[in-house]
Length: 175
Length: 158
Length: 193
Image 1 (spheres, rainbow over the protein chains, first blue to last red):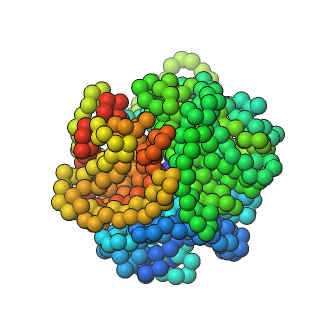
Image 2: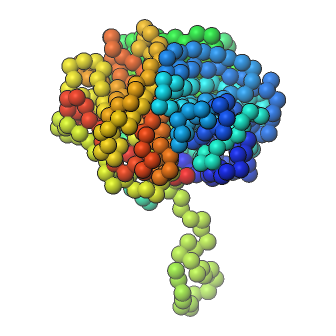
Image 3: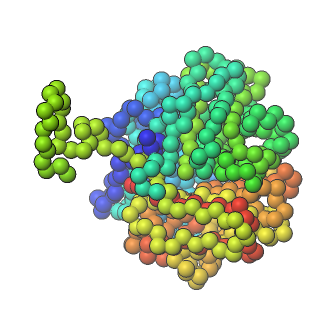
């Protein structure tokens, strides 16, 4: 049986939505993976991850490694994990590439949010993010929201796909 | 190859009690790459997670290079040890891809992402200086133990 | 599709009109191997051509080493055999001593890193190309690469690339300044979306 299955894809039209949400997905998998190709209608260029409709920033943490094409830095905050996407001020017809891994999404512990994201442009500036995030919720993940968090919206042509990754049945030994 | 799963779940373990070592053995050599996901935590304070391929405990047979951000500073490091990353007492994850693991004509390279929101976002790469096919893969919580409910999942990719 | 069936004389049997016989459709998943090339002798260039346009994204996995007499070497990648100034790149890199960020102005190809002849092992890369079959927008590439070594020259990098052509990606070419060494492997996967 294949371990990686497509659950659904959302393609953004010209309505400029501020969120992309996946809900009603199966609870029989092991990990979830979101693959996002996105552009912002504004110069904001940030997309945050929220789980189970929890919009309380204090319930999340993030720690980032960021490069911008010139320098490397690191930041952290008690707030939504995020990745950079291409913004409206950058090269036209260009979208950022981001993946979000949510391991053990049906577990009863706090949830890890693992993000890898890049933006591109025909200029000096191009972001690369590695993000380690956390959500304090202990419930199984039942919805995943990619949000502009009130600043900007997703441009037409943005696509988001959700995949379910399911473990195999073999075992391992413990010592 | 349509019709044949290319990304296959091989094995998994969820700890019912804490343990210091988890081993996947008798790994079939029929895939191209292996993908490992560790999700969970250790029991007491942050701890390194070490890798053992084919039971090889000689540290200098492994080499690694990292790039990480701890929230204030971006750094890089390298070493000749079998470190795969680290976990702490809060939830985290280590994901690792082992390339051409069953080939017998090259050292074994691996790419890792270590997610510890409490400490750092890190990417790591390593190499095991052995041309043997990988038939067992173990992870060890150094001077510590993986906590109950920590999960270990191994996939094969064609 | 079954359009007719003859009943046997056996009783207590359940009859189905579909060959699925009441079972769910087998899913082979979202991840298809399109092609793998494993070279058995030194080779100048590897080309994936006539790439099916039926997936959402592509992923490439490369295990490679070139004859460049260095630890780290350049691996050039071109889409659709286009060798004009249509490629842009940015890199976050750690080499054990310095973590750095860089950008490369318009170039005739992508140039990511692989292992050279002096490296202990083979370099490994995972490259994701989103919406490769799109005919409206440029193509963005996200790549993790590493050059392994037990002494100097090892590195890890998260790279991005932009192919400033709106046509769908139908071919991908890899070459090194010198040949790829036997044992190098190039795999192309299609990801459904």
